[in-house]
Image 1 (tube, rainbow, N blue to C red):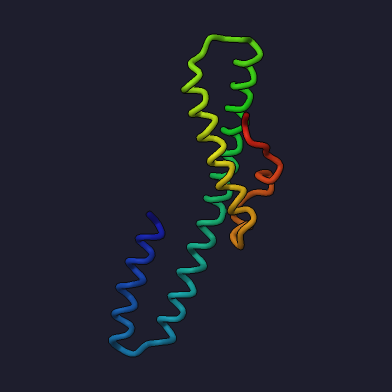
Image 2: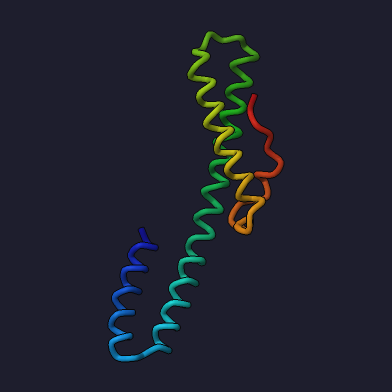
Length: 115
């Protein structure tokens, strides 16, 4: 939401500045907006991934406990949850190997998919 508001403000200011041929001000605003988005976006994404790792580990422990105790649980629901967790893990590990790897914590590399 913050990004959309920033981009709307940048668009409005760009139209205003270009009308008066103020290119240096336009460049300053573009660079400033990019820096603000990076400064806000990096910690939000990083800690969101950390939160997802904690959820993944909690799900893993729950599945292991259910299997160990031999509890009667719905197999289909459990398989669906395993699929969702493994999809998230695959996506996170993919982005960890991309140029955007600074946005993803290194902890993702050591996580093994659920079985």
